[in-house]
Image (cartoon, rainbow, N blue to C red; front, top):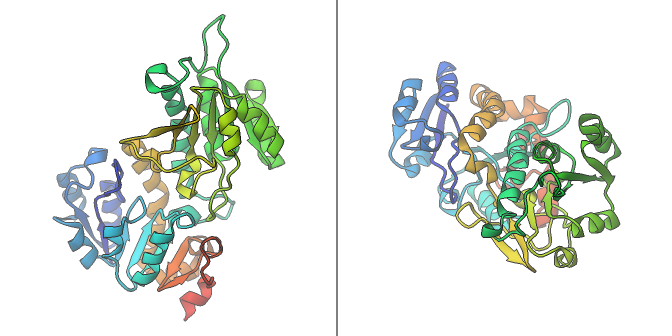
Length: 372
């Protein structure tokens, strides 16, 4: 199979679909890999590194899209990239379609076979291709929050962990899953007063077993969210409903009731965000202020640490990429129900039930789409 790796063009996105070592694995299995020139610069991988791994360097993304049978990316294709997709071409990347009707419309029109990292499942549960970036984003969320709590950056001007004789700041984490647990790990390490809210008793139990009295685990209700958000210095939103738009758990009224200079970090922004006041930002302009509360809503947070992120991502995406390339996409999807859960759009049909529901499309079972 001919595999194409275009350079990411989303604002300040420095990750890349395959590392040189991943390219080497693909070539070892008999596949041809085309890499756009300078695609790996953000992770310190030169064109020469890719050539040594067996790739062919291509000058433009247009040539990559024209030649490749499978496109492997990191972030969702931008409009100019979507226009280059063709019937039955395989797109393997993060998509986050539910809050993005324009992208969904274009992918349907392209006729491409679109597999979203974020909805691929695992036998033991969870979302294995989303988890590495959730870990990175959870950790970065606390770093970002601490940075923007500094007064020169618009915050209230206090240290997250305080110092002896000065109390620490209150960090509220909404969602105790992968994002939440990794955010809690960093916040505890920085000495903050950490509160984690979740509506799953099992998640709260797991959190208690991991952190004990180092954090406070609270069952999430509208009342508890309001109580803790309005008294917080830093709020991190890490809720997720796989494939669906994120629920708006923090209202405009709650934001207005927060103290001036407090900070909110919406890690759920890829799925539309879990704060009513959230709108996607970029690493170029990461924050804005609503009712004197600093909002950090960068939609590709892990892109800020591309070396860590790309290698962590490739660890989990490469095996599926090889399966698709070795077997062909139809057989790979038929053989593996967990990879099949990642199929969001197939030849003009929406095959992710949550996306179809949220955006008003007819839903087609993936198996039916594959067998027709």
